[in-house]
Length: 221
Image (cartoon, rainbow, N blue to C red; front, side, top):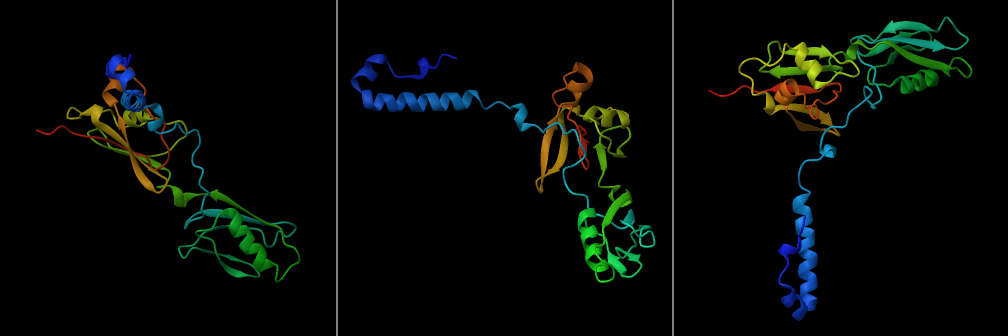
């Protein structure tokens, strides 16, 4: 882009050199900012290849296995009770809900240390049933069959919309939105669903992550 047309006449600049330099510098900054204000891919959600980077916390209903090395009598496989606890020999009830596997292992190790020397404890979540609804993605609004489905790695906006039977006859597809919880707040991204379905423009066919919500609005009558 030729920005020289925004400058004062050359003769004026020569007569007012100090002020002219300031005007030229300011003009370059303003024009550059204006020409770079269009949306960029960095403003869109990053394609996520994994489930989540957050540490998993054990919840009520999860099934866990606790291995105490060298002592099969203490090694158990149990569900987490509604009160958030499990029961073990020697130490009785242990709070498990809200702990990561590592922190629960440390807690059990500390309590067992009162009864046995240098216990080696590992904790494995064998069935994370408490996270079922945390690991779902949802599509609502003007689709033929609104859905709440388990998240699977690699799912995209298009996959979710097709599972919902596609937009219905009242949909304003290009006004669709993706709602995503990120860094403690809800962020909203535009989805140009009509462009995806009819023109093969996949820029807004975002990769999904657990808890994503896609909404397709209806037109007003």
